[in-house]
Length: 105
Image (cartoon, rainbow, N blue to C red):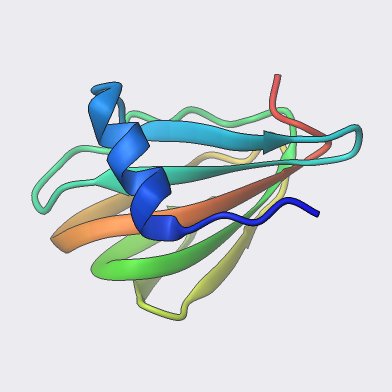
């Protein structure tokens, strides 16, 4: 078993001065913690993998393809591989659990 604490993952991510920390990589999936501060610009580009975003904290909107929806704690968003997507209008610091399948390259 592998178990993680989100507060410890966020501290590790911050210690490495990055917005993303991959903390799990297995044969068929990977998982990471993504952080964007209020007012930040999301630099993402489409990924070659399907993704699931689970918002842990914060408030923002996300656009996936041509669809936009607000997100906050408890929101879950699926993003198909290759589709343009971005968080925007980030009004509260955002922490998002990201699951990729297959694992992120």
